Image 1 (cartoon, rainbow, N blue to C red):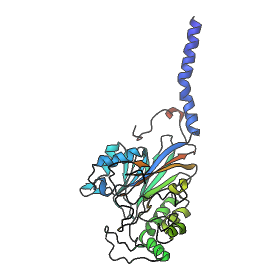
Image 2: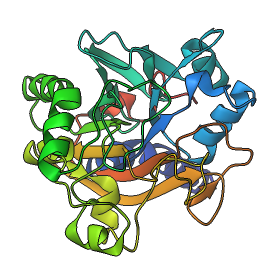
Image 3: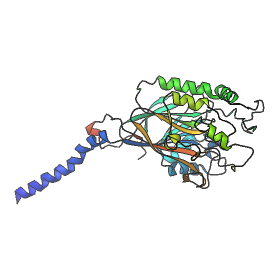
Image 4: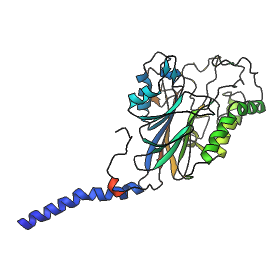
Length: 336
């Protein structure tokens, strides 16, 4: 009888210890999963009369892990810290010397292990690491349709008529910031670590303003916009177009839920992006977050912003370095 009890006890100890031994091996081969979001919250997230908790709800409904937020400043102050507190997350308030959009931040449930000019490095739950950079680029000029935005005022900028004019104007308005960001990314010490670049680029993509789109009347002309081309040449992939390569079937408009499609004072477009590059990274899903199911994949009402958000899910299959003794411990700063 004693032998039987000892045998059962030994087996119990084996199964109790077993998962602790197996987990590190499993974690080293299983792909990590991370969901990255870009969200212009519109002047602090409260400008449309909604409480800040509604902006938090948008992020929660998107099930994001990392969010590049633009326009964190409201008329009454900057809401970065409040957003982080409501989410129970870590945050990085951007201090980019070359930035147009000074009031931006990155929110994440992960531990922030390094801070860069305009970005951070996070440690995922698996132990893998990734960089995240956030941009908010100048809106001017965007006048191919003879429309002058009322905010910010652009009364001194001439209307554009040709693709060449549009490219020159886009480079002048936003090219310097994109180039500076890409220089920073090129100087990163760990070249194979995944990098995400998100933001309100305030510039469409060459993948959208195609000849077919122009002929259909969706856009006035074909334009090979330089911002998206620069990202592609630097090795970045547009997450939305990676999943939905047909620009006519899936336009993915992020601007703007505040205006009807036929409103003559604006032009509906895709100007918010999630870009990615790196070894062992693959986009598996991408969605638009907005106020109605006709355009958005994730619907939140009332919707608090003038931009729809874009949220992409990735798997990262690079092998992380894990210590067996820490295999079953939660990662600091993961919000759990």
